[in-house]
Image (cartoon, rainbow over all chains, first blue to last red):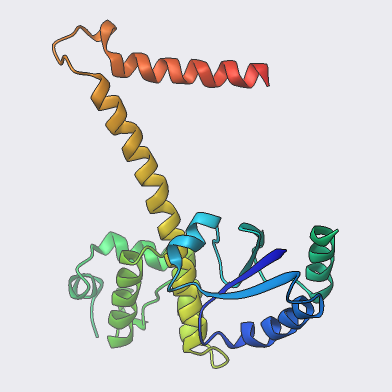
Length: 85
Length: 143
């Protein structure tokens, strides 16, 4: 099981569209294989700092900061495929 | 219109600070007198107060320049400023963590020095600092 966490702040318009696209990719792989959690950075600032998040939006996979900005669809897909092997 | 002295007084800074901000391109006089003295308007006062307030929130002059550009950009909106503020807060939280680690390290050092009257060459704090540096160098050598 791969756990994807997306850190962003509510009301971030530029994130919303990109996030929806990335979420669809995660869901394509099956919810039993990939979980998707959207983290409100303002509510979970301590957790974000624990993971080393320095900017928003960012993506952590299995509790490790992997993308410090939103990746393209291909990059996320490749990273998830690699971890699911 | 304000002279540089009056402007500095309004924002509780020195005239040197005003000149420095000008040199950094953050502020500019509205006009000059015939004798060449700088004159500032109310916009300058607001801008100077903005710079000071932003500095107190931890923004660097480079970041303040970006904030001022956002403030004057027709394409930008409140959301853009908010995201700059959120990133700044993240940076500050990271710094706070780093400072807490340093503070804990100092607490440990203070604890090991229980006799304040020892001569300097027996100072356990200096010895611990020296040893930890030696360990680091040794560790690197082995690695």
